[in-house]
Image 1 (cartoon, helix red, strand yellow):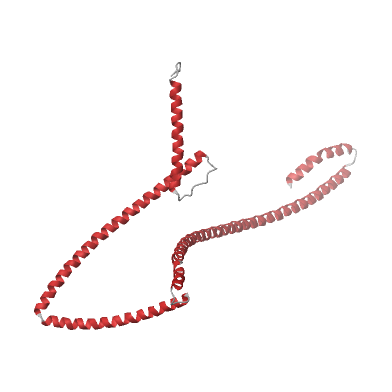
Image 2 (cartoon, one colour):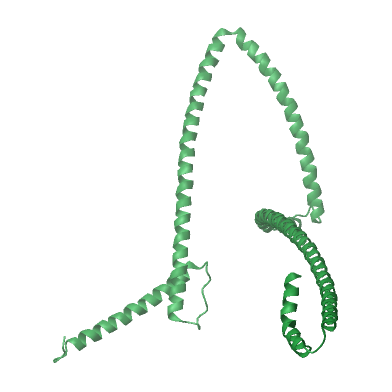
Length: 309
């Protein structure tokens, strides 16, 4: 306020000097009244300016409070936003981990299903081969019916077969019963052999001889099993070598066809190795013939007089 009064009086100093010079002719009381009136006006103006300044300060204080409140709200909003973003990030990581686990699980299930599909395809091929192999039996039954005067159709043959199977089971049971009886008789025979010492010694010697023969048979069996294993290993190696040769022949055949660009001739099946070798032989013979012609031509040209070597 002091600065405001100072500036006010400095601003009005020139007006006062002018008025003083213009009122030099006035009397002293009149000048005193004029000064008092000016002081009152200045005081009123200062009061108005002070009120205006205080209202301006109040407005600044309110604006500052509003700004502080907005600052707090912005901090809270920023904190909530960061917290929400962190929560979303954690949820996204969890979701990505779950999706990765599900992907791994699906891949494992896919591999299992592929293996199962391979086994099913193998089983299907085996069943198809079995059906193809057993397809001859119905034809055989029809031929039996046609050749035999005893049967009128295939059902009678099957009925006869079932009857024979039942009879076989009966015979098997009878044989088992007879086997039990034989075991009883063997027991009685053992008791009889025990009673005769000479016969026991004789049978023991015979048993030892049979045991030696059995040992020899076991030894021969091991030898033949070893030979059979060797034969199987040799066959596997030969099979592998044959497969390698077929693959090499197929690759060479494809290379030859690619080089020859022969589209008129029908392509040879991948399994027909002999035809592939014939094709390769024909191409090689053609190449050898061309090479010989080129070599002869070069030799004839080089032997000409005046040829610069």
